[in-house]
Image (cartoon, rainbow, N blue to C red; front, side, top):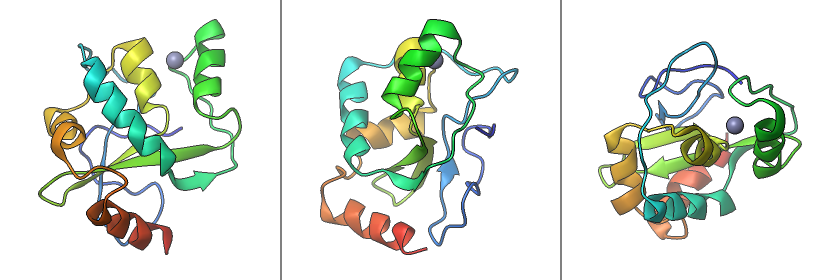
Length: 140
Ligand SMILES: [Zn+2]
């Protein structure tokens, strides 16, 4: 996986929808740590039913080692990778690697506040505003 600082412009894949990077962690880059509530993690997991930019490629994840690495591979579906896109109420889109929930739960990664706010209060992934954004992304 590639490292991108949080809230930089997303450009991992070409996209017609402007998005910001969140959770693209990689050693040796430091990342903020802290506690994310279980309810937010649960809300974040709802996006996993709608992966974006699913690829079959295998990405090395230098954040994860040993046993932890195996659990992260399990969480990410073992082969391939995908992204989770979160939409804020103001229309801002955040693009995250699928491993972001693992980073939050097992590495105490603390995403930026605007992202957490979007997870808490933004359009739910099964709703129309979210699906419209997703449809335009997957048309690329
Ligand atoms: Zn890990």
